[in-house]
Structures are given as structure tokens and as C-alpha cells.
Length: 126
Image 1 (cartoon, rainbow, N blue to C red):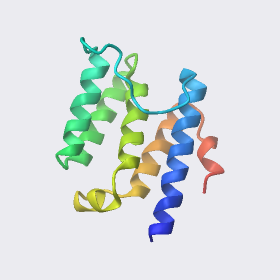
Image 2: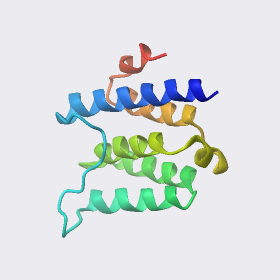
Image 3: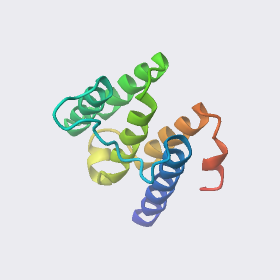
């Protein structure tokens, strides 16, 4: 099981990095705050989502993320990539304790690729 989760983690990391590179010219999917001293709307969204995740409310955070993605506001997709990148780094035990899994992280990242018409990125990662 641990080996399988390691594979999934690499798949998610590779997929989110490819999306970040293609869409934003970045080498990482890790979300970076725009300004240190003043948060933008997307910075605040990311902070709220991560606070929910850290409180164990992962499914609630993901639901809120998808509500925001539906609005299609600038910066939201970058937040989404950072969100799945963050989830991917969490221990499997934490995810399981809060009714989530590495496989769901992979599905979420794949869903992002599909939204941008880049679903084939994840095809070769199985």
C-alpha cells in the first residue's frame, strides 16, 4: 500500500507541475502568495482552503474550491493547483483520518487537467 501511495504521489506531483509549467510558466505547483504584506482575493481563498484542510475538513475545502472554480475568476485555477499540491504532501494517515485518500488527490488533479482540455497529461501517469 505504501508503495502504491508513493506512485500516486509522484503522479500527482508530475501532473500538477506539468500544468503549472504549461499554464503559468512555473516550475512548481506550490501556491505562492502574491504580496507578503497584503493578501489578494486568491491569497485569501488559498489561506481559507488550507485552514479547512488543516482542521481536517478536506471535503468541505474541496467543495468550496469547486464552487470558486465555477466562478472562473482570475487566479482560482492557480489556487486549485496549489491546493492539490498541498494535499499531495500530506501523510496518508491524516487524509484517511479525515475521509480522504491519495487516490482522491489524484482524481482532483486529473479533474483540473480535464477542465483545461489537458486531460491527456494524466493518461500516461497510470
